[in-house]
Length: 123
Image (cartoon, rainbow, N blue to C red; front, side, top):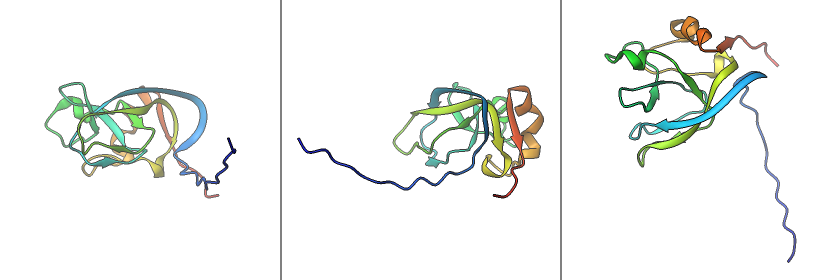
């Protein structure tokens, strides 16, 4: 057997502001939403599946952030298990929300859950 080697380029996306206090897990993201990007702030829908948080939603639970996606997730084929960040410090400029929401819309509620948004200094 001949060993094989490959090289990949890693480009950090700077989602994590710090690795201190990171808590991770996995939950089901609702299917039919297309591709959701790493850094999307998510909430639970009425069926306990995750969707992008949206303060304009008519569903109260969808208005409350619970986690941040830790990887891109393709939900085109149905519900999918996704890695999540439940707590930690994140670069405010690298997270995204549903609807027209911004970091200011959810900052206080996210802080109560241990999800802290920070403004990263340019490299």
